[in-house]
Every structure is written in C-alpha cells, then in structure tokens.
Image (cartoon, rainbow, N blue to C red; front, side):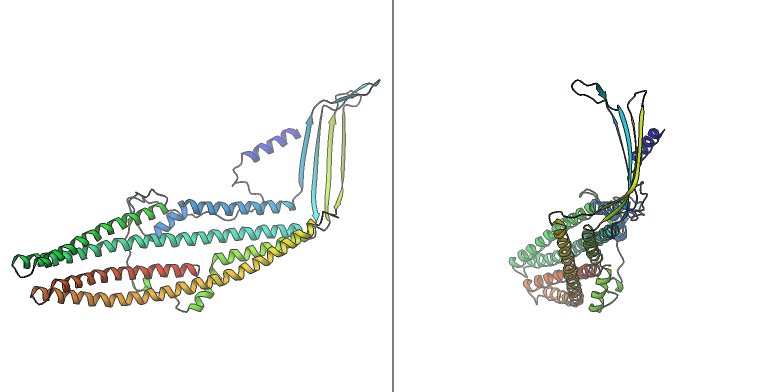
Length: 444
C-alpha cells in the first residue's frame, strides 16, 4: 500500500505544470495583463496602444520576466529548508557469499529504507539564506521594472521618430511646392526675356533638389515604420498606422521644473536604485550565511528500514532509529575564513556600487533636464525664425515678380523657409523626446 501511495504522489508532482506547483508561496509576481485586442496592421494605434502591445509581446521583456520567475523559485528553495527532508531508498538484488570450507550465505533480495531529517537550529544561517533569496527576488523584480521603463522609452522614441518623419515629409512637400513656384516664375520671366537662362537653371536645380528631399523623407518614414513594427514583434515590412495625437501646452511642459527635486524623485523612484539596494541587502545576508557556516547545526533524524531475505526462518527484518544530530565543522583548510572574507568584501563592493549608482542617476537627471531646457529654448526660437523666414520669402518673391530682386535672393529666401519649417519640426519633437528621457531618468 505504501509503495502505491509513493508512486501516486510522484506521478502527480511530475504531471503538474511548473507554474502551478507553488506550495511555499514563492511566486507572487505576475506577467503584464490586459493586452489590447486590435488588428495592429489595420487599425490606427495610439502611443498607449503600442506600449501595451510591447509589454505583452516583446521577447526581451519576456526573457527578463522569466529571470524574475527563476529568482522566485530560488526563494522557494531557500524556504524549503524549514521543512523536513525525507528520502526513500529501495534495492532489489540477490547477493551471496561463500567462505572456503563454509556454507553459501545468501543476502536479502530486496530492502527499503525511509530517512527523515529536520534542521532545528543553525544560529540564523537558514533565515539569512531566505533573506538573501528574497532580496534577489526583489532585485530581479526591480530589474524587470527598469527593463519595462526602458522599453517604454524605446517605444516612445520610435513612435515620435515616425511622427516626426511624417511631418518632415509634409514639410518637404511644402518646400517642393515653394521651389516649384519659384521655378515656374523664373521660367515664365525667361520666356518673356526678362531674365537670363542662369535664373531658370538655378531655380530648376533647387527644384530638383527639393524632389530629392521628398524621396529621402519618404524613405525615412519606411525606416521608422520598420523600427516600430519590430518593437511590437512584427516583421519590419508591416504597415503600422498611427492615430494622430492632439498636442496641447501640457504636451511639452513638465510637472516640476526644480532640478534638485527631480534628482530626489529619481533616487526614490528609479527601479535600478531599488534593485541595487536589494542586491546590497542580499550581500549583507550572505555575510551572515558564511559566518554561520562555521557554527554547529542541530537536526532531528529518524529512519525506518525493512529487508526481506525470503527465508522461512526469518523472512524479514525491520529496524528504526530516532535522535538528534549535532554537526560541528572543525577544520576545512581555512576555506571558511576565506569565504567570510569574500562575502564581506562583496558586501563592501555593493555598498560602493550603490553610491556610484546614486551619482550616476543624479547625473542622468541633470543632463536630461539641461537637454530638455535647451530643447524648449530651441523650439521657442524656431517659431520666431519660421515667422521671419515666411515674411522674408513673401518679400523676396514679390520683389522678384516686380523685377527688383534677383533669383539668388529668391532661392536663398526659399531655402531659409524650408530650413525654418524643418527646424521647427525637429525642435518640437526634440522637446518631446527630451521630455521622455527626462521622465525616464526620474523613474516615470
């Protein structure tokens, strides 16, 4: 009956999915939920849609999540030290021996033995191992959070780059129309004998260059579409459609403009900082683990054995035992002393790593903040420059129509207008990108 019970338990354990079997409650962290139900290649998607899709489908995030689950299993292994360990052994063989001038003696054909041991006290080593495993789980979780934040920033960057390239195409097409208008005016005046052939050829050259800029802008859209498609686990030739966002004043502004407050927020929110603190805590627990390894361990032991030799005079034999076992390591070639030193130095190393990461995060926030302020200032200037370039182009074109200006002045004004349009687009999306980087640097 006992053999059937043991076999049944083993089969049930082997048949259970790995994620379903968690008797010690180690697996607490769950994968992202609420994946959107949309046809990615047919429906327009917002930035939030792309972020949600990436969190659910991106392979690198899935790999990071599996690392968290592996750490949780390690925590379950450390918790199992609080439970008794039971081993069952069984043999089924026939042995025999015969001494010269003696009788042949046959051994037992089969035997079984069950042993149980339960660690009762080890001066806190078991608790330290659990604390260390728990700290590594938390570090892995914060590491996953950092991966999520970085992936969100990557999606935002790809999304904004695609929007910027689409607006650049519109700008290039507008510049093309302006150059075309200038070329047509120069051609008309050439036919009337009012300007030389040089005017017409220069205007045509600039017009053809504008055509090339449109082609390059179209190519950039394809490149950025491919980059965004790959992030959502699609082939690069997939056609992803963006829902045109509505921009307001809040789009480019930030909640708090105090850089010191932003640095303090980063130290509180950044998952990398929280992960490093947990690694430092785990290293501290590891010191306790190594120190307790040189102290005694007290365990309770019990064993039950059964053997059968098929002989009618004494067909079977049973025996059992129970008691306490005290294990005291005396000498291991000084390895324990070096293990304690190694753990202590590793803990000090993590302390220094924590301080170094703190300075690194503050510097990231400082740089991101300065980049954002510069981008804002550049955007404000670009608006003024565009207004001036538009007025300059109107004046230059009017002068050329009246025969008071030459083609070089007109084409220069057109080029300045084209540059001003593109610079404003670049400046605007530079603000959005720098704002995204700033928020990522403070852990949002």
